Length: 441
Image 1: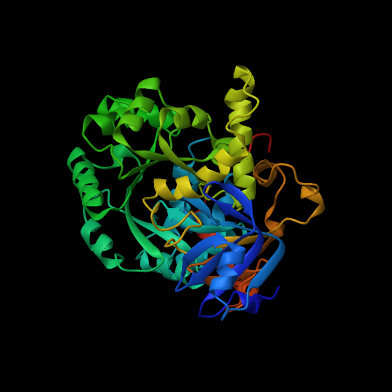
Image 2: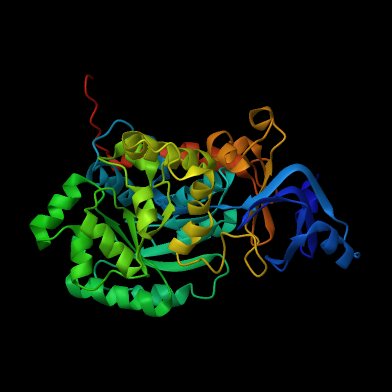
C-alpha cells in the first residue's frame, strides 16, 4: 500500500479487508470514491467486476472506517492546553479568556492549524469549534483548518447580537467550513438575542453552540441571573430545538433531560474534560435511552479519537455503570456510533459525513488491524474502543483527499508548523499573564 494510491483526483476503488458500515463491520466489501464522495458501496466482487477500468487498491490487514467527529473543540486555546492541568473546574476567567485575548491574527491562525493537525493525527476528520474570544476575524481560524484539510463547524460568538447573518452567509457554500453561531453561556446574551440567534440558525440549517450546565458554578450563576438553570431557561424562552448544540451538560435534572429529548436538541458529551476539570460526568447512557441526540467531544483536551471513545465508555462505567451493575455501558458499537455518525448528526451534518454510504463525503480512516494489540480479534468494535490507538491510523482522508499519511501531511510541512508553534506559543502564554492555582508550591 502506497500513499499515491489514495492521493490525487480521479476515481478510486478501495478494497479493504474490513469495512465499517452502518450495520457493523463487514468483510468482502469495497467502496468507489470519486469527486470527494463515496459513490458506491457494496460487495467487492461486484464492484471490481463493474469497474474493470480501475485497478483495485487492496488493503489487506486494514479497516476503512468513518473519521471521528469532535463535537466540541476550542481551536484557539491550543497554546494553553496544558495550563488547565490541576486547575479548578471553571477556569475560563483565569486561563482561556486571557489566553485568547493575547492572540493576534497570525498566532490565532497558527493555533488553529496546530489543533487541526493534532485532530487529524488522532483520526478526526470533522471538528466543531465553539467560537473564539480572540480579537480576530474568524477567517484566520478557517484558514488554519482549511489548509490542514480538516472539516470544521466554525462558530462566531454573537452574544452582542451582531454579525450572525453575515457569518452564516459568508461560509454557506464552502466545501469544508460549515458556519455556526455561538453564545458562550446563556446569560452572556439577552433573551432577545438568544431567540433571534436561534431563529437564524434554525432557518439556515446551522447549529447554535452554547455551554450549558457544565459546572456547579455555571448552574448557580444562571439561577442568580435569570432564575432558572441553563437548560430550563433556554426551554422557557423557546431556544431549545434541533438547531441547538449544548456543550457538556454534565449537571442535568431529569426534567432537563426530558426537555432536551422532547425538543430534539443535541449536546456534546466531553468525558476527558470531565476528568481533567469537571464536577461531573454527563449521564450519556441515560441520554441515549431517552433519545437525546449527542456526539462525543474533546473540549480541546487531546485530539485522539480512539482515546476519546475509550474515555467515553470508561467514564460511564465509573460514574454510573458500576453502581447499577451495568457491565456493558452501551458496548463498543454505541461509542463508535456516537463518535462518528451520531456525532455528525448532532452537528447538523448527518447527511454530509460520519457514515460510509453512497452519496456521503469520503471522510474516512485507513486503520491497521493486524497488530499484536488486536490479535486474535473476537469483537472488533469493542477492540477499537478499548485497544486501538492512533499509531494504527495509516491514512486520513477528508472529502476524498489524502490529508495525512502515517501521521503527517505530504503536501505541506507539518514538522515546520510544530517548530513554529513551539516558538510562538510560549510567547502568547507569557503575554496572557495566566493565573494558575498550584497548591503546595
